Length: 81
Image (cartoon, rainbow, N blue to C red):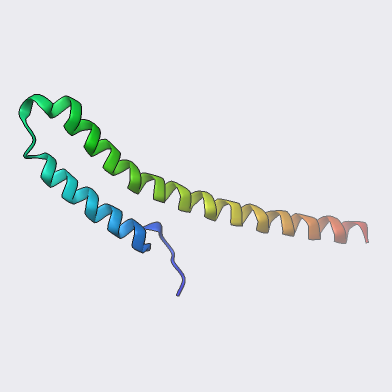
């Protein structure tokens, strides 16, 4: 089973669900913490999902670069033969 999108990863689904729970819980924090603790907690929970997506995209990019390098090497090899 091939995964076409990082949103299909189990780890992403769990991180997203946890981020939503954190958001709901942080709504109950005191108003005076709105721009300090609450904001930091919400940003850090979103950061996990973003990092998973970024890592997945970088992995896909490296695979594509390797394929391009292989194709280029074949072209150069055929050109010299």
